Length: 214
Image (cartoon, one colour):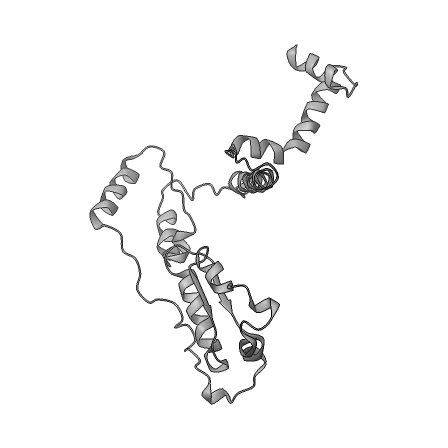
């Protein structure tokens, strides 16, 4: 609670200072009247430019306190984001358009920045303008998230080793290895079906290696 700041065990940690290094916005709500305004401020910073996390600490007494709604600072609906749009270099855009028009097999990769920059309507209009129909939409990308998961696990284990032995290490995570790990069950089934097709029903690793080696 704000009234018990630095008076209890939960108040001893500098939460805002800790989160400032890993978020785009970190702050403490000082009063109940400012809750709505600071929530909109945190959302604006989270969506501004490259999207990222925001941390807003609301003390318990500030959250539970009741006030007259007329005293609260409430932002207007739909006005919590920045109104300005990022504009690219016109010459670079023209050069890109020439490449797309003159290419035989054009490829466009849209990221989430298109949505966060509120350019999705223009992006959809561009895709609908192709003479040979809309492009192929890719499915869920497990390479990035899977590799990140394995990298995070490697970092945790490296930190554990450092705490135990005092020695650090370099952590490497290959995207191909991460994807293969996530596909291991289907890969096992595929290899097993191949073994059955050639008459090898033994599930031992030795038989599997013999099949793979011919």
